[in-house]
Length: 217
Image (cartoon, rainbow, N blue to C red):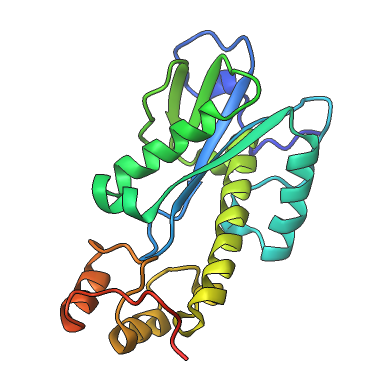
């Protein structure tokens, strides 16, 4: 029996024809002080059910990893894209997020007739689109997109940790935890930090405006 917590596309207060392929879109990494912002777009295959889809934030890392593999295997098509730290610094985080979402939708193998985006803003697309507040907990395709984006970004942060282990990226994924803030004060920022986020900007001032380019031994 299908869970009632997910809204069908035609139940999501949409004002356009729901016929055709529908893609769900979500992002991961708007709030961190470091690393790219990642977005995913997913078109689910109604004939291949994926059990356990939910907002990525309420799932454990193990649950997300298992669902990530299932989504990649069973979705009709999916796409993951990102906007770099440099683009975040140049555009600001909101516009960089919209750019990552646009890239994710454009990367789909199949073109959707409509796109449902988690949140209250939508990127500029050449297809019909609608913002759905809380969509990652209501619409299965958006839940799937949230999982792909989260897992992909977490894995990116683990590779950043290998390059700069003293910041602890593998643990906090770039968020401004006390440990991360302490590392910023001690070491300054590295090239993966978002220069215009307040704690990073403060660290750059303290350390003479320069970024670490190599690992600290």
